[in-house]
Length: 314
Image 1: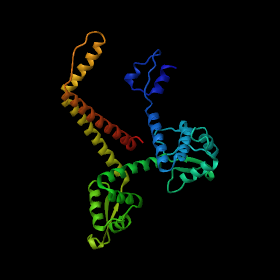
Image 2: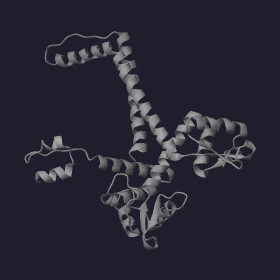
Image 3: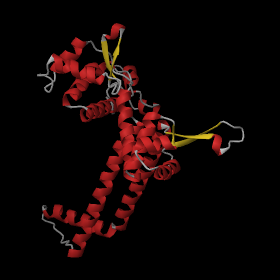
């Protein structure tokens, strides 16, 4: 491989390029491929959780069969496949080896239904099938937002948010009737969601003076705006968790220093140069506490990283 071909393949900056010569091979992470594989993994998990293992197996087989034809990480739909290609791809997997043709056709029909839309027909006469990756990702994002609303504001608020996400512009009385929430409580919950930017209020007046008696007040969910708002909250939460972890570790520098000495004494003991470092009972409890706190904070940061990836990278 020549130097020029290396440069074209790796797409590195000019400073790194200067370090390349004919005797040197440089490696980098294929970020787009990592995102693509993680995105596929999430789509498969979503279909399995919403339908069943068989449907997830079909989606996984279709994505694997067409993966080499994807040109970007945020592909809206997969490359098309004939029915025969889908059947062969499914039966080449350990989970799909015993799936009958009727089972595969039934799952495809279910996933192409308007209510789900996980798969669409394409081509002349609908002879091809494609996986609607963007549709599945959007459902996953919507579910994540609904989970946040449920956790923060309760079941009734989540029901109202889901209703507005599905139906669009509705008046307060319509929301109350369809969400099965008392009218007064509906008003309070709507304004709580409005304050936190999960819903929007639009006024439509029949009179130039905008008299309340001649004005309609319609509620709606601007999903794209909500997704950006939630992502921004996640960034702030991740930053706060990182600062909290740094603060906790900074507060325990003395005990962490003793732990470092303890580990060093154990390793040096193997060489016959042991130095005696011991911890008191109180210090042992202190170590347990900082480990417990650090574990909780680090796990929370990792969960937030997964959620941020769903909203930003997928």
